Amino acid sequence: MKAINQFLLENGIRISENPCISPDFCLDWEGLQKNLRTGEGIETFPLSAFETVAGSWSLVSDAQGDHAWRLSATGGAGDQTGLSGGVEIDEATCFPA
Image (cartoon, rainbow, N blue to C red; front, side):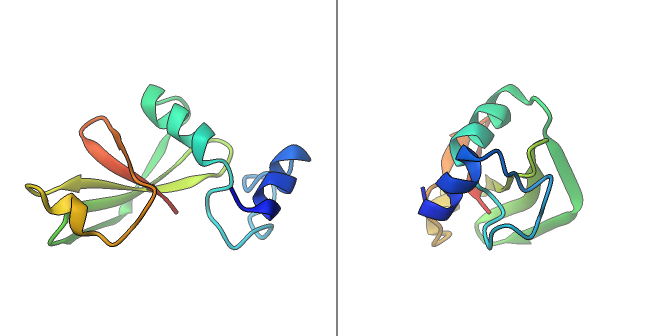
């Protein structure tokens, strides 16, 4: 975790309250992963959806304002995204935004 993100979390400063606090769209990747696994407070943005050779992408967020890209991979193409930090959740791979 970046030092600035750690500072913001430790001081209760979240993206949902001030979206300009960080260049990242995900301060608390661990917390977002937990919410994605339970589905608690998760919002999907249908207009963010697009297709690539890797599969179908969409943007999701939780109530804290943390965002992730959700990839429903086509075949084994999910490994060819060039993104790091992805985790498998409910037959999709999620990456911090």
